[in-house]
Image 1 (tube, helix red, strand yellow):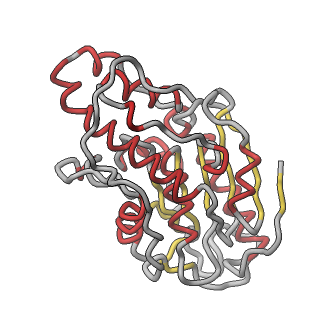
Image 2 (tube, helix red, strand yellow; image 1 turned 180 degrees about the horizontal axis):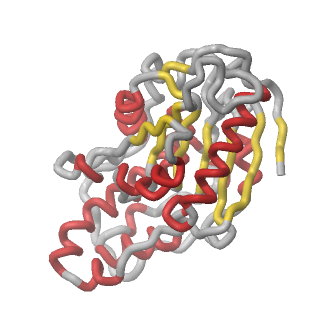
Length: 290
């Protein structure tokens, strides 16, 4: 389906070619899901081959940045991801939590036109309920909240005390970060188009057409085979969908302009409210269900 809003994309590339006037493949920044580093996209990157200039990012405390302190504030995460992207991109792809991060990044872009957002495996923030972070006081409650949102956690992680002790703070802080992004992006819009990819077996994603609330340009939802971890479940399908939708974006909206430089972005708005790193009050029982 396609939902059209007011406005349109500015010129971006050449008609009839995914590579545009320069003959180069389109550059896309990739933001992984909660708990994942850039290695999450390994299979997708292999499926894409050389068709896309792949620019992955990862948050502190994840992947190769595992030794760094995790972030729980959306504005700090947006600034960190923007620094990593660093240069011009033709689109931003974000999966699960990465979709919200991507929305904030493209909405804060200081140059025009804004790059399109490819939002995968997440309901739009405008329809998301609050995550009751005050009820997350144990590995069990943290995992319950994450799985209710579509995340997948190996059972051994909960059963093994050493693994639980190691990963509980990361899961907890990623849930805090998710809530921070829900607050930041619930009413946020971008002038760039939004293309939504959803797994047909992803029961955690709903009201996907409401992603149109977050753009003044076009919004289109595309269903693919796979579950919540779409790039892991169906990398070939995601790769082909990415190439096709980027061709559509470049062909319909572009006539040779350079891509947006995300290094020149405004700082994302700071969030009001309590310090998300405040000590947690342990509670008994599982976390909330959405």
